[in-house]
Length: 254
Image 1 (cartoon, rainbow, N blue to C red):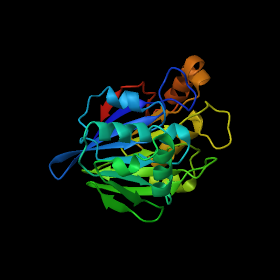
Image 2 (image 1 turned 90 degrees about the horizontal axis):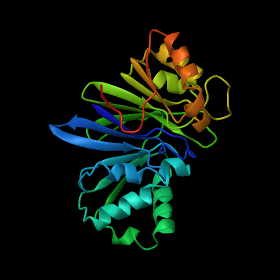
Image 3 (image 1 turned 90 degrees about the vertical axis):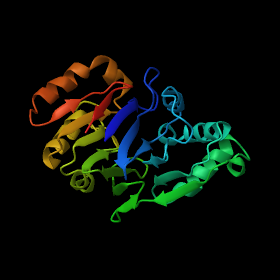
């Protein structure tokens, strides 16, 4: 499983694109490419990879805030422009189809009916693992201002956890148990913020669920500029977890 951090930023960071993760997995001998979230500043980072219009197989939407979803219309219409033919799966919580279709219609009226490929919507609610695109998809509700589903994605004997936004909950901690890579929002260092995670809280979660690696993303822009040293000090005090603070474009294998 190959993981590329297209963006690692929060909603309003002027220097770093919104958090979005490109995951490539081996499925039945063929490569499968999945995009986890697609905020308004993400499409340009995706296009820089120069992938063909049919190479992306699925998009996961953790929740419906703009910095996780509003890049989707541009991505889909460019696929149309580049003559995509392959079905595209869009996965998320209940209501993902209505939200996506409304989003496209608002951004590019009339284009939903002009797409040259089908959109296949898949709801992945907590308590029901879904198998599709060569992967197992399981979710749990995170603590965020809008309903956010954290995701455990398993394929080819490897698992990663992606929080979307929010603070860990007992349910998301249980969902992440034993994953090779835990990707979690860490908006602040220690100070709690309603509906957002902290680096300290993510480290405690990673220890509790025995994750092999922890990647901290969606860090507040001021914290990223001025307090990364404090996050690294916390990480050094938690030797049982390998901690990453990825930059856009960073890539790793699990």
